[in-house]
Image (cartoon, rainbow, N blue to C red; front, top):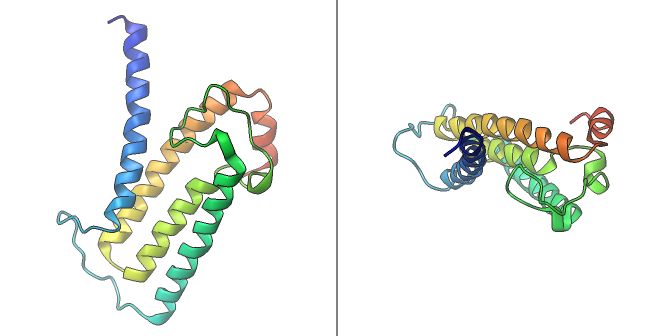
Length: 157
């Protein structure tokens, strides 16, 4: 294997690992992993539970809107599809990564309904993972779409 091919392989593996871990962490919200304690931080109350459910519902709606706005450009991978275009309309007029941010908010909403160390760890891990994914995706978008820099300056988040 030449050095160039190894570099491409490592980058593709990194992307695949990011996507796999993202879905795995979301999956873990529904199933307890025994390595992390499931001890509650504080007693669950109606306010935190209601707020958590509200965040989950609103963020789920944002995800559905983002999926509709992306259309054929939708992909779980940070690298845009070969025949994709830059979407700057709909919800993407207001935020660059609405699905990623919504996933983090959903994860935080689940934490609020459980108030456990386990779900707090999952939320923090998911947020960090998505941060790495956003950095990688923005590199691809900057290289593929010449007007991405302008879009990024106009739409801050």
